[in-house]
Amino acid sequence: MSAVSEGGVAALARALRARSVSSEELVRAALARIEAARDLGAFIATDAETALAQARTADAGLARGEGGPLAGVPVAHKDIFVTDFRASRLPSTAGSKMLAGYASPFDATVVARLGAGEPGRPGAGMVTLGKLNCDEFAMGSSNENSAWGPVHNPWDRARVPGGSSGGSAAAVAAGLVPAATGTDTGGSIRQPASFCGITGIKPTYGTCSRWGMIAFASSLDQAGPLARSAEDCALLLSAMSGHDPRDATSSERPPQDFHAQMLAARAGAAAARPLAGLRIGLPREFFPPALAADVAQAVRGALAELERLGATLVDVSLPRTELAIPVYYIIAPAEASSNLGRFDGVRYGHRAAQYADLADMYRKTRSEGFGAEVKRRIMIGTYVLSHGYYDAYYLQAQKLRRMIADDFRACFGQCELIAGPVAPTVAGPLGAQAADPVKAYLADIFTLPASLAGLPAMSVPAGFGEAGMPVGLQLVGDYFAEGALLHAAHALQQATDWHLKQPGGAA
Ligand code: GLN
Image (cartoon, rainbow, N blue to C red; front, side, top):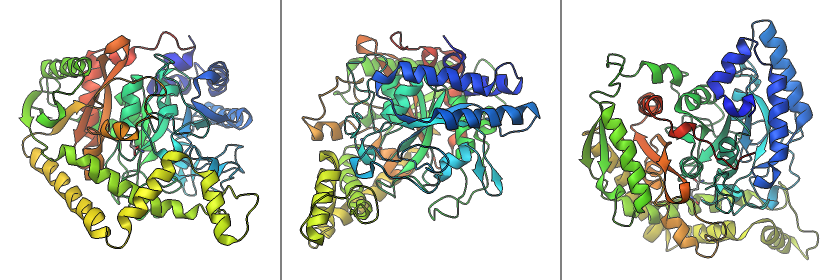
């Protein structure tokens, strides 16, 4: 097993700084592993030449004792983040045929901050290996809605990796990269992290800039890292977050060191009981009778571990949990129908080869460029925003969204964190979701509430269920309480080894 798969981000950053390994070695090893694991479908593209050039720059900086905090550590980006095509020969497609051949003239803020940085702000110095597969425009939960084919779950290649950040989760789980970026609109970081047995965090809405993140539902979209451990996630999140004047919804809080916050949280607690005094709320709606027994058992096991570490479990209620599904599946398609209006064959990407007039060009371009799920959502979104239905659907959904956020506020009077499962089952077989989109929507029930409320939430490995497939524990924190969230996950990972397990079948 190579250093790339053994070491997490923290360990690799230390090894690079100690000069016991070079970035070029790490990048060469990672590229070889990616090549050997092509059939996983995790990567859409790599650019070896540019990655090696970045690695050599990082090595030269490290030799002078310079470089960002993660200098030389490899990373890969969900292909929903645009990457400057002049700097690297990497596509920016959002998993869509609509953007085949699109050459972005700039880097997303998240990409720049993890890499070389922006003018006047040095980056973390990570090396970009390539772009990762995802559901088309991040719509989906199985990664089967990608125009570039499905991604396989490294734990069982006949199963889905989850979605929409399925390529990101599979690549980390298979040891191809120590960390990857993802985006989460309604669960797309947490659910694939859970299905692939890794750690992922969606921070508070506004924490990471959406500049250069191809938009799905702007009031929900949020970037975050996927990695093996909470500690690695904290390191990436610190580097990729922070105010960006180019995103009006980005938080104006000063830059945060989430890693330091993670380590400093509950500093007075005894080493054996690092979570002493922490109240973790268990919403009864997150443990319905329909929850798969294997998931319930694994989640209960992780909760017992948190109790052993000093936490107190308290019963709470999020009474509008079930309503999160219709609310989300009105608001997200409504915003998507508006955001995707820009793909008209004039400004971006695909244009039909033959057409009679302008209206025909739009029709053919959009019919050819978008996949079935994206078209379904554009139609739903257009419908709920149309005259006469706006009040009945969209406005009602907005009101309920506020009430869902209020329910969380009430809970946070009784506890500091909320816990439950990420998904009602472990990863299912490839091919099962396409037949029944509504069934797929229903499986988002536990991740949608935190998204609608804009709260930080993460998935932490919690053991294994049916057929040895990974199960994730979901932890939700109050606004901007990422430090507390990461601390609880880190404490759990210091005491357990679920997050260290790797799929035997991985290359
Ligand atoms: N599964 C949800 C959907 O299909 C969430 C996707 C996401 O978070 N991007 O919309």
